[in-house]
Length: 466
Image 1 (cartoon, one colour):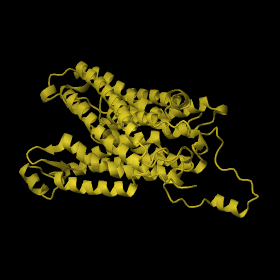
Image 2 (cartoon, rainbow, N blue to C red; image 1 turned 90 degrees about the vertical axis):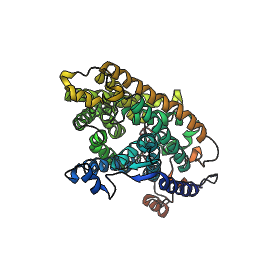
Image 3 (cartoon, rainbow, N blue to C red; image 1 turned 60 degrees about the vertical axis):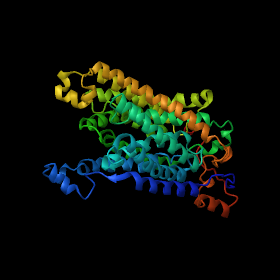
Image 4 (cartoon, helix red, strand yellow; image 1 turned 30 degrees about the horizontal axis):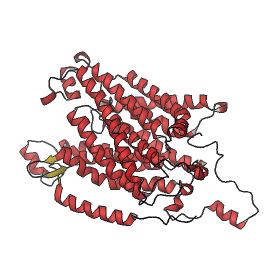
């Protein structure tokens, strides 16, 4: 296949310029915080801290490591399901995640961690976790555009995505004072609608020219399932990394419930009761997405199971019915089905968080527990739980609005003919941007030209089920 020759802005130029800019900005603004600096010993003595175990690093590093694995391994391998786009799935995930975390440390630092006396951003392990959270929203958006955009377009998507994320996060968490420790609203809802709107703006009416590459093959689905299992195992850490301990239990139970529900609905919907790997790879994770906002609330263990049960049903039905409808009617080409895995479960999570917050009581939480959970201190010390529920709902609308408006604006920028995006016939093919070794089966075919050879799965086995 011929390589794309229309690239105007090259990937090496973008990478080098961006990295040099980061070096300069980090040199000006970024410093270690007290717990990361070698002066920790002096800080410990001054604050009467008895042991190193009270350093935030020791408490949060295990969660950071789990979240980091989710970002680079979980999301990366989940996107390798396409038969000829595995390099692009895991490789470009690697690129934009490494690109985004640097910008996220700056953007979130300016909003949340800027030392006004010295004009510096003090970073520690919690900043690294939040940067990974920020990048997760952009990786979700990438899922809607997978195989249809260039790496330079992905860099632009991430640049603006991180910026928008930092602003909407500040509005939701600081101005509205809503709680969203696992990011159902801030990460998943925003990231999904951001990516879906970009995909809508970049709609390709002739994408059918590369439809033969939109399906999966046996080994690509196995690799994608590796991503699913990493995400599923570590999602309790994702939702609890900056939350209280109960978040682990609630997420654990919601994930388990969504698995059973997904298997049931998938089997019922297919001929002869067989399972569809598309559903198993994705909808089984919906419980983790939906439990993000209410993860540290006293939603009760059976309440967590209900959230996972409902999100598994809705997500699986989304893959069965909404994905084809969105492509045919709404002109939204959602490669990974992020509307089903992130958008709808994210909205469910926002609603569950609002209801759970509004129904909180001293008898369930305890007086100190209620204040600690919702951080009813200082400016919001007199806020009631009913009002908190309203602000939780407002946070959901802010996330959706930022996703839709931001996606429309960024989509318009990405539509400019300067980014080197692939032609319709070349979408979903690694050969456009990667050096791809010859397949063994193609070598065999070249040595035996008379051999019958059919590559891939039937057209019926496609992620969109169209």
